[in-house]
Image (cartoon, rainbow, N blue to C red; front, side):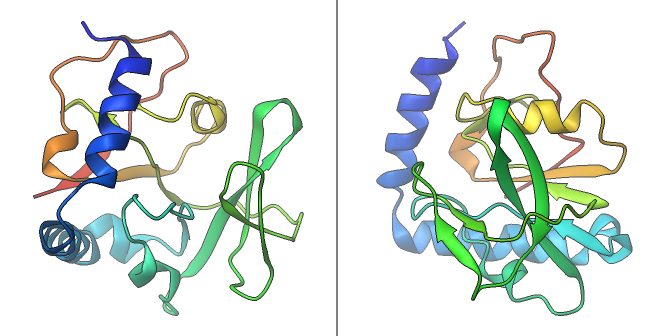
Length: 171
């Protein structure tokens, strides 16, 4: 079984070198599936991650005016909250991720969980900070991830604190 650090390195490279037309095609297909899904239709407040350039393009959801869109904000001790998304009130963190200037927490009913690799049963390799697993430990809403075809792997080493996502949208 490959170590998470090895998987992270391999997947970051694969994402950074992913053919742009294939990426656009898969992004559109995955987003269409998600927008047609019951979990999207029923959600009122959706937590969306702010992608780095090589990650899944969240533009369609960030501009969705039919839902309340919230984004993660990191706090000390590797904690995280979600705050309202306002494109005019963002700053760049030392990690290179855009976050809200607001400190007002909002509870989503659906979280789009980022990552680098997933198993079919929803376990994932994230970026190693544990922010999402800590948040999801007490979260009772729905979770989903958007996954490109090469990001599904057969097994992942699991820790007791790893929380699987409930829905995987993929091509």
